[in-house]
Image (cartoon, rainbow, N blue to C red; front, side, top):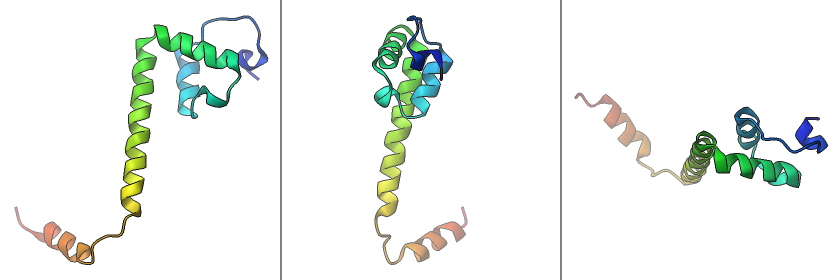
Amino acid sequence: MSGWEGGWAFAMMTCKEVSTLMSMGGPADARWRVRLAVRLHLSMCRHCRAFKRQLEALTKTARTLSASLDADLPKDFEATLSKSLHRKP
């Protein structure tokens, strides 16, 4: 258990702690002190804010890609792909 989970004295979280927490899905299910500490850190650290935006963009892109892969491919997809790959530049 880290100091943040144990609830000891309030101190600034490090970039490594914040980025690790965000990479694992964010502080949504963490204790209120951890959520507050993350918000405080993000309000002061432009690098972690940029990292958070990048994670959000990656998540959005992965969801969009996943949804598009669930769609059925056209019947002539394989033939069209093969033709495109074998076309000489």
